[in-house]
Image 1 (cartoon, rainbow, N blue to C red):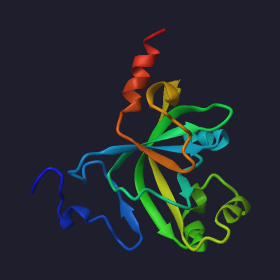
Image 2: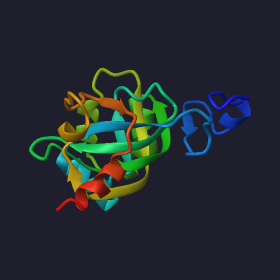
Image 3: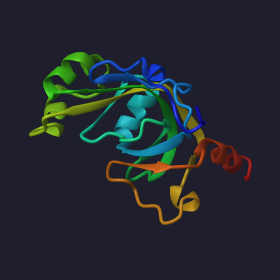
Image 4: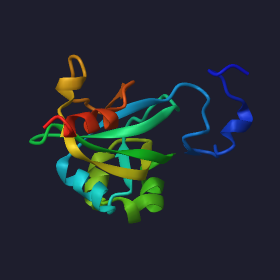
Length: 168
């Protein structure tokens, strides 16, 4: 089988609306994504209190390797990243039942976010890394605009962060 294809057996982690995303399951090229996240939630992610990132829309590509955390205003920087342990899709009520202990948010906030939604998505946060030197994405991504939900990027911003931290 060519490097850009994979067999159905390699997707053995898929069950119903829950699938695992270990880094070595795909033979296709990996891609990274940037998520816009409010600074208060960024802190909860780094503190380990928020283990799920909820979304109304989730990636349609299955080969996302790292999710870069873009802290929204007033920070406006990529402050770290996490790997994806799993992606869960359910009705909002079932999603809350399954994930509320790692939500990092109140039920009221959750309900307001998913009001009038038939489906809820949760990205289960895997390994979390806080960058020593936050990155201004406008310096490394041409025509960058903060994503409304997420955007794909094909560069490794962690390696760029190491370069930035040694420039001073």
